[in-house]
Length: 139
Image (cartoon, rainbow, N blue to C red):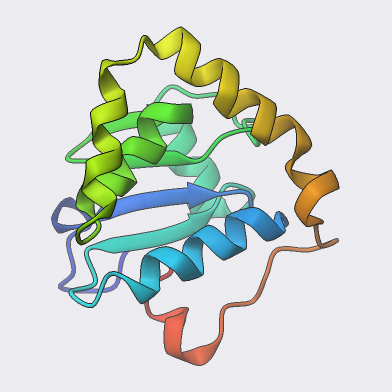
């Protein structure tokens, strides 16, 4: 799954819907703000993504959420988004304060955006092929 001599335990793994333009944009947003390379990425549709979903006890057809794997724990929906924000440079960690909002309420908003993401941002027929400069960040 990872490159030789590289432990995924040292990284935060972000699984995204590889055909979603919004998810692709999120990936580029994170990479631009992550010069230390803490985040690694995989498409939910990829073999690695599917294997990670199985390991986390999540359904393999889970495409309506970003999944974050951090130190062996799996986070989905708004919790995943907040975990990402927490690891980005200032001012993004301030968003983590929304963790105090009940998960059900946070996820209502998250699910509304997830449900409409293709219509608002578009999608591809196939997963994006990362550019050479960000390919090293993909599992």
